[in-house]
Length: 64
Image (cartoon, rainbow, N blue to C red; front, top):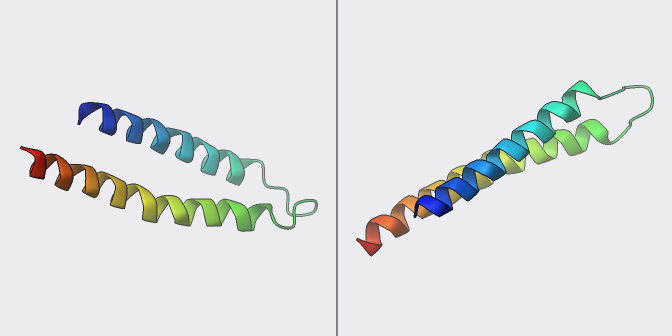
């Protein structure tokens, strides 16, 4: 179970860095769809990661 949390935290860190990088490097003149993709990735991460960690918690609790 600890390995699952470690993998999840690693993906959360990668996700957070990619979202911050997307916001910092956004150029409104040249990048038409870049902000859309940055917001879309941010939205997906806000949905997927809590579900992932809750499932790990519930499955780990069930296995005990």
